[in-house]
Image (cartoon, rainbow, N blue to C red; front, side):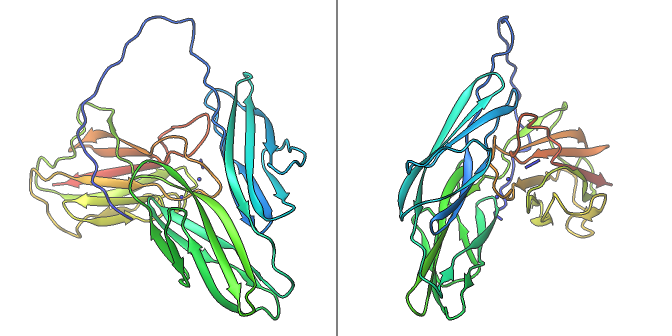
Length: 332
């Protein structure tokens, strides 16, 4: 599995719909979706292919850097620009069926400072819309840090703070171009740029059994157990939002499995209590989301409810609904 806390209550009962259609000569082939992530320090950039293909493997890549230089044909690549400017970068991908897709983005690079200068860099980690940015810049001997400026890519900027936290507006999956500019006491500046992806919490609860209602039919105590995980995101987070607000797992892809976490301590919840949970996708560095995060549930009060979560990252075999497997158990 592949890649970025606001708890939202999930609807726990959904109506199901059935679909039908006429015959066909076979499944239609789906074109790949080209996409790439990037990070730049001054004139030097690294480009990472995060394209997805549903039907088959990608077999060809063509990078165009927008400065008249030769193209590159590897999945990932690096490029140093000749001068500060804004360049149009394109990635063309072709799959084994011969279908193709192109992604194009504008990249702004800055001139490097002279000797005894700062070298900007930063790390970022997101939980749904909430991101933390950490300055990892270095400084040559004789270069003394003076100031920093964060640009979060949504018209919001912030000076000085490190680490910096920022909450993006709620909405669909979105990509932002973020920047950190650091300046030393001599007035020399360096800028680091990178793209990040923020994703909404899982808001689709698909029924895969006769009942999707997590309702206590008897007074009971409740535990939540992480049964298994098969994902690589940082901070896939599980939150109970009703009848209490409790963060159960803060890093689902790495938290230990098999441990039953009591909800509300030893509280005995009355019959008729409805349980609500929210799962938030974390960050997968240099990756892309292929679909909206999704949560499904099966089971009942007697046997417990099994929730399976897919965080939306991945390739041709996704969604496989094994990123997190969670058991909600009620004990009368």
